[in-house]
Image (tube, rainbow, N blue to C red; front, side):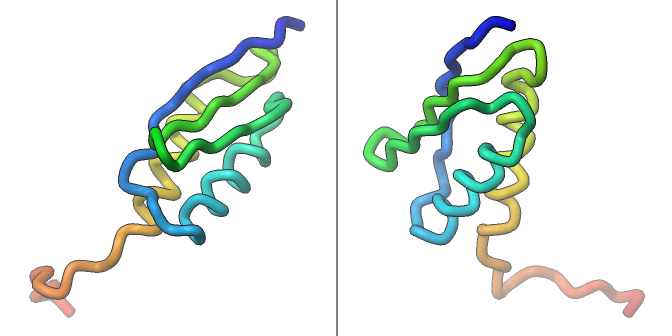
Length: 82
């Protein structure tokens, strides 16, 4: 077991609800020991056990939160099949 640190971007997630979602998503990954969010620099500092997880899990979790927290565009084309 080796505890490592990773710094990942949390750009485009700038509201309190989004930051809470990022924190929850990262803390729910097996092997994550600690998470510190820095909204000023748009980064998350993550301490983790590298035998249980990897930085790929963090970026995947954050990208899903980013996707969910983005507002739906008003001018999005409608699906013509529905």
